[in-house]
Amino acid sequence: MSSRICFTAHKYLPTLENNLTTPSGEPGWLCTFYTNDQYGNPMNPVANFTLRDTRIKLNDFLPSGLGPEWTMRLTGKLTFDKSAVYELGLTVAGLPPCSMT
Image 1: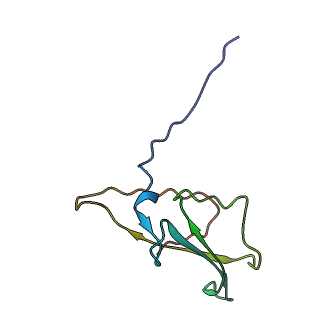
Image 2: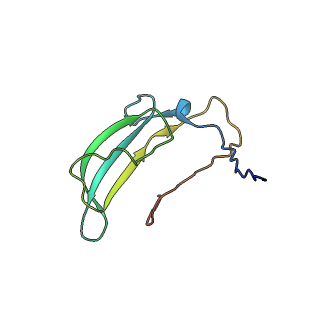
């Protein structure tokens, strides 16, 4: 009997939560959920949360009041202690459509 072990390893860049502040100056970033109009444009804010982590999973919680199509907007200020060239990464998983602005 033989067995084969397969795995995939991913190396991610360091996360940014220690360098993010909300528009009001709190640590983290502001997460706002919106209902969408008939054209898919964000309309009314439903809920705001201050997130202290940059790894966001939406598989176990969504605020009430959202329809089948909705928008989530993340807002924050990214600052570093020194000026330099930085490499940033983004990982997105899920069903389309997804847009980032």
